[in-house]
Amino acid sequence: MKNPRDYIRTSLSRRLSIIIVLMASVFFLGSLGFLFVESRKAVREEALNGAAQVLDNTVQRVNVLMQRVEIASDNFMWLPLRHLDVADSMFVYSRRILTCNPDLNGCSIAFEPNYFPDKGHYFSAYTYNDDGKFDTTQEGNPAYDYHYMDWYQAPKLLDEPVWIEPFADFNPEDVYAEEIIASYCRPMKDSKGRYVGTFSTDISMEWISKTISEVKPYPNSYCIMIGQSGTFFVHPDTTKLLRESIFTPTLEHPDTALTNLGHAMQRGETGVRKLVFEGKESYVFYKPLGITGWSVAMVCPESDIFGGYMRLYKIVIFIVIAGLILMRLAFSRIIKRELKPLNTLAQQAETIASGQFDKTLPRDNRIDEIGKLTHSFSDMQHSLVNYISELKRTTAVKASIESELKVASDIQMGMIPRVFPPFPERQDIDLYALMTPAKVVGGDLYDYFLQNERLYFCVGDVSGKGIPAAMFMAITRDLFRIIAQQNRSPWEIATMMNNFLVKDNDQSMFVTMFIGMVDLPKGRLEYCNCGHNVPILDGKFLEMGSTNQPLGLWECKAFEGEVIEDIRNRQLLVYTDGLNEAENDHQDRLGDERLLEAMQGTEQLTSEEVIHRLQVVVNNHRAGAEPNDDLTLLCLSIRK
Image (cartoon, rainbow, N blue to C red; front, side, top):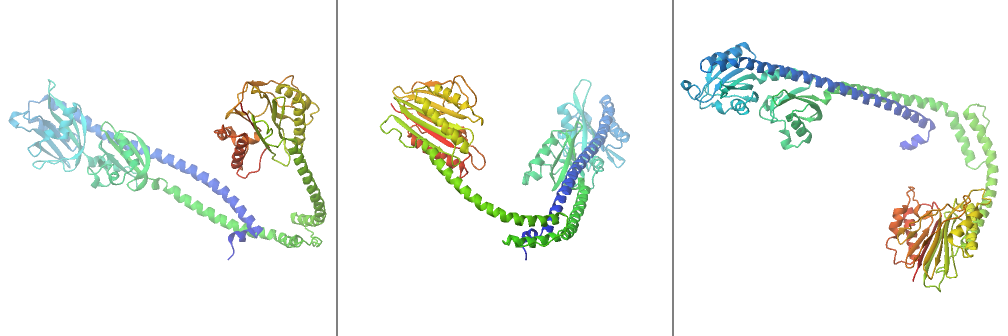
């Protein structure tokens, strides 16, 4: 079986057809991808806005229902307060509020212990709405001591109307609501402001649940309601009502997203969150319910929101893939037919490739690109014979040039001092230098000589590389020797060298240079920096007060120099930018920071050891990369 890669590479028609199909695929998939991403955003935005609006309407409907309860209680409250001295009238009022408001589930007018002495310790006129049939009774007994119920205690303690979280009432000795109810409770006070009891109206949570559950913006969406503790009051699974809270699943499987949602609903916030809710990736919209402290949430599975979108997505992807396959087959046949003559030409060209340059190609009368290619091959055949002869001659000339360059390199390296130590009879001079051209010949230079207890030295870097830089370097080095031997100061040397190099400098070449002179008996260093890299003295860059131009750029009346009164027992390093700008294969430069790091701890090293240490640092940084610039180093230390 052929390797698929080789199968494609051996046929131009296959490659072209695949390339065309791939380009078409990128275009179509990119366009469709952008379209679907934007469509998904639009669908999501519209779905979120629609679901949020539905939730707002639902909460508004529930608020209206609960406000009806509050208004009914407020409107009937004055009747029992007006007849606090007539106990039996409370039964009439309790019954009347239900007959006037048949949506209410029950009403209790409950009093403090022994408020009516003739009625005993307990007295609560309670009426229960049993599907339109009203049962009225006196509520309260040792088995059902309402004085300690939340619906009685909350308004008493808070001294204001309050909604009691839904509960399942139970009175084993009397009439009670068998379903889950929520109560709106108001404190009752007599004319002197003393608390006398609680006026409570009940609504069935089934009624509220039905109102909420009727809202289904999507087939599998549903609503829930939780209280301040997170307990479910409304949920499609009725087994969870009053038994579980929104935090129950997190007890066995911690879920930060679900916990944060529950806390947000407890705080009465409004919003929407995306999370895994009850095993499904869903969007949950939540909003507080009036002053109750409860919160309503609508759970919309993501699969419902994007169901239609995903079906369309799959259909379009199928159509695109099928279209690309058909396109590949069609293009392959068309291209193969059109390129058939080229296959014949390829076989003929193999004959020439085998070395039979004198083999005559058959005539081809085609005038299209393939015909032009055939004629070009014929012309190439004749040109190739001539080219091979010319190549042999050129190779011989190149070998001669390389030999001459090697001689030029030897001459250049012979121009700079390379014997170390340079002054064996002088124990007070520790000097070592190194120059490594980036090419066969380079444009860096260094020089030094001793004259009348004065040590002259310089380090320079000519602009450019190769032979022109090498010639300019030779001129610069000779100028330094000639002028410095006249016992000139470094700045005088720089001024005279610049005035000479500026003349007839049509190529605008220049050289950066550091020129120094040490008075050995005093250890006094005079120097002039002509646009060169800042030297390093005792592991730190030398602080300079002035910077001059490079030599050879333009005329300058006088260069400025500086003086260090005593550099004895101090270490001076002068270098070219081939050191700090040394690059590896990633064009990452060595840099000044790493250069200073390499110079740390060199105080006790000899100048030669310092130079070799820097050589190792540069080679390690280059990691085998070709040198990008000439490298020249000179290290000097004068001992007392």
